Image (tube, rainbow, N blue to C red; front, side):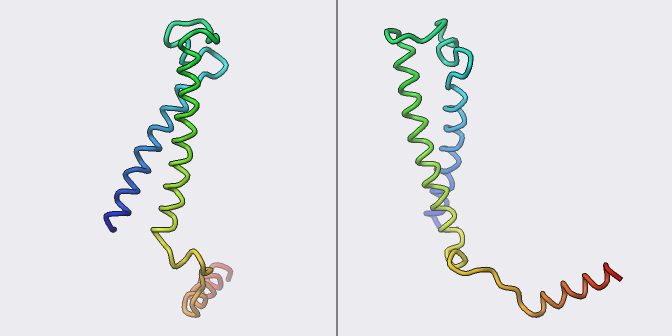
Length: 105
């Protein structure tokens, strides 16, 4: 594997872990991050509202980076097979036919 591929894989792993943490920090039906920080609810005038808004932005950026690295890895790992369909050779087709005959009868 080339150096570029290794760098992309490392970035992909780090971003995926950060994305999981970022999603888990979001507020759900309960208070989420606001309740962790001690507030009962996030209001417009509290600091937790700003934190939640910034967390939304961070999650969006991490999601875009994750999608980009995923597409890059798909393209880098197997560039020749992206444009061509997989083919079977006559020997593999014959082996499959023999296997089917042995199983069936």
